[in-house]
Image (cartoon, rainbow, N blue to C red):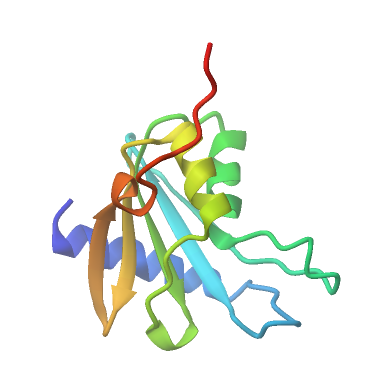
Length: 130
């Protein structure tokens, strides 16, 4: 993935921030996941006042794509208000690994894309033994 493609995917993630619902934390996040077929699915974080029912933008985007029968993922971009570096949480890292162990993670750092492999963020994922 080149820098221009990463910038475009980050722009999609920023659009998703508009529908974020974060009344408790005030930390609004958007994500956009790119499939092998070139489709983009967006997600935004959704909070509940109990704070135990928080759905991260990355999982919302992934679940949207999965519900559309997508199974081939190239990259996911994550953006937050203010452009601060926003890596996926541990739960999101593990869920992404389940469906896309080789996915690229694109984050925004000082207005530029920072691209990492999921394996760099989740070096020892949990795997079911069959």
